Length: 185
Image (cartoon, rainbow, N blue to C red; front, side, top):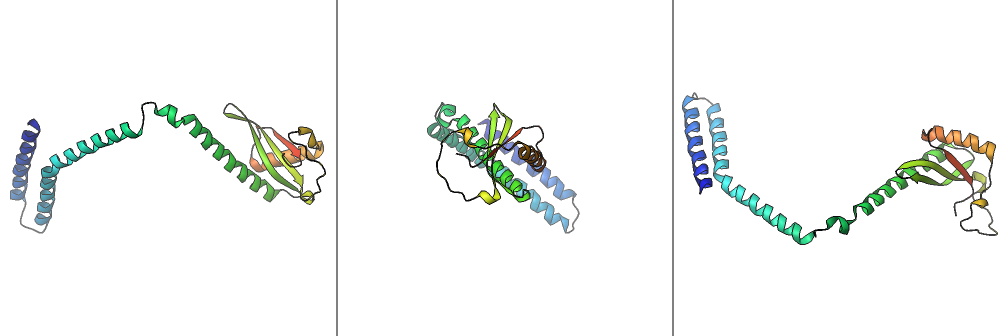
């Protein structure tokens, strides 16, 4: 009941103030614009109870919908950690593709096939680059060994120059880069 009394009081006060403004305004072309603005404000005051009723009903409806759709233990059901790890994996995959494209454009004679990021907690510890000579893209395979790191040959002098070049291209001087020759198994 108090809400209705406050609402009617607002209407009366606004009509009183609007009438005083109209009396004080001289007869010119701006008067009709002021009257339009005052009329719109009066209309908003009249619609205030309906708008507030709709807001209450929308809030109540939203709360009911949340209770139905989202259970109490939302964190367990959604698995925020899973979503974060998927997002992080996507970001690392996109970063990997960008780094490979950028390096392959600037390297001559070598091709990067894959990059592996070695992470410890949330920090990057090492970048492992899997490379081939450009002329060795198509080779005959006699034997395939799965998960054996000894299948990569090492070329230390060439690797050091290549690592410096990759650090320069990727602008990563504080993360060690390890080069493995051959395709990643």
